[in-house]
Length: 397
Image (cartoon, rainbow, N blue to C red; front, side, top):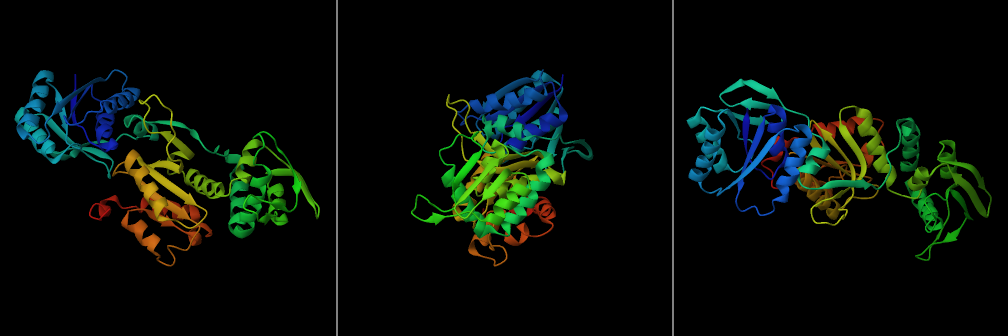
């Protein structure tokens, strides 16, 4: 029986990558005795046993400031189990030192997960390595004791992609008209059932703030041409049409969702990313007996087992938006995750304070020029794959 000894770490990927790659019979976690919330280990065990159903799971607390105690605990586990491998990827610096000493004393194999290169390496022989397992978003969510509780928007089917992208580009090039048209439709449909698909209203209406709004006929004709609505009738005084389905209705009465759809479709079409999700809502603590959604993540996916968080703003970016994105990234993915903000502004082009702040925080930015380019998909891929976690190590974040 192979026993794998791990040192518990706040970064999810360090706790699970080695075990899911080597696939031991038993996993033993040595953790800081100052940790009082044991629910984190329930989530960790749940994640690992979803992949390794017969895995034996054990945990042992230690004083992480005592090299002797960490060494003795590690050595006792090796002695009790015989065939053991020690993973030095996680834990504190003193855990690494003590674990390495215990492994050498016991002549045990010692490994380290090179997360960037995607392999688990024998530190005594770098040519002896195991390819790293692929992790999913579900793995990360399970490990922190969270859960997906739905999506604020339904992702479109592949056969809808072309029409949605065409509509997105039309809206982006007529953004002022879209702002007024969307405000008009939101007011008319505010109190309707989601399955009420008939739209009938005066061409000019007064909205809640006292302003008057009216739709742009060219936008409405484009929506009909691309199949989002049908039976469009526009007269000087009235407009009547029918949404083709409830999903299209939800899209058309949401101003910013079109940028989220634009990013989502390009991420899917790249073929390079997995677990691409739109408008994801997460309950950050499933053990508190309350189902409470946290902040919505506009688009999220994985790139070589690392979570990528994308915030989409069909407006200018703000410091609050950057901070929210950074919190989501740290909470779910930790250091080994990536963040991108896609904003309909000129922040990057003009090197604004917001763009500089994003760079300081390690957040990639795509702005209006990128969105309106003919190769946005490649720009998105470049932003993800060019996100250099190694260089970020020494930035003041």
